[in-house]
Image (cartoon, rainbow, N blue to C red):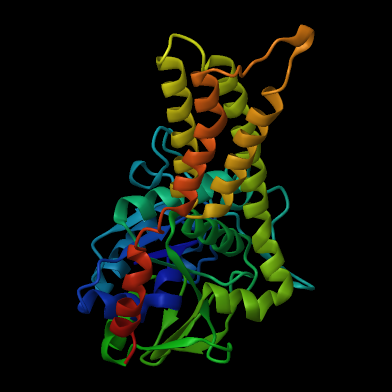
Length: 375
């Protein structure tokens, strides 16, 4: 299980009980914190001089460590650190974007830093999250709903990037939800409420905690809930966007299919130009290239759609270049090698597309996860 949160304290406020319950059930849990909350508002008067300084970031790191220990988590990471960064990229630090309240709710601060989380390229943030999913073999990713709960720019970016990373990595995504969200799954955390309260208390710069409530810097007082709610991705998309959400989800598939079509056409052109060279190695390498390309798309996207688009590109290129060229020359002559190249890619495409879908390990484990966290 991977919990993706924008700032220290979010993990305890929104999901602290669930995290503690999962730990008790023996489920491996990783908490991924995207920023150190440098721009958070400080409640205690004696510590307000730290607001907006690097010293606050260090203090909030310590608070997070104490909260994580209270919940029982042993794997907490900051996005961009070496253990939460896409392989081959230099480590970086994502900064708190901050926010202000406007007429329409939460708004970004003016003059936002280029190093802030919400200003970072979505692809970079999502790939760093995906690296953690891959390393931990997380079956389920949990983060905010599409508006980040209340509109904070970092929460919105966390939702978008975590959902994208989960889609790419083949993990499920659940959004933190309210009690009244249609289709929400309740998690009874009453048995670990004392640990949730202790985790909230650890974030003393951000929260005032009593036996039954916590208070935010804006003065709002909220009961410490003994039930936490989550909405699986499909239900969350349907409730929030209806048909438009489904249409929006098609665009990545369309883009991937177009890319696959173009790549397949290029592979078909290369194979056509080289299949006659150094017999029989040229044709063998050309067919191997087609097999690796189509098989790679099938595995990478866990879908036949992109592999089929690549196959259309390959076969289309072979068909186009099989005709007579300038001066009557033929790129695919009526020879044994020519026939192999004419029909071989079609056979490869049929095998790749007809191959049965591999068992989905992550899909099979989700009912077990649901059983563990539900009463």
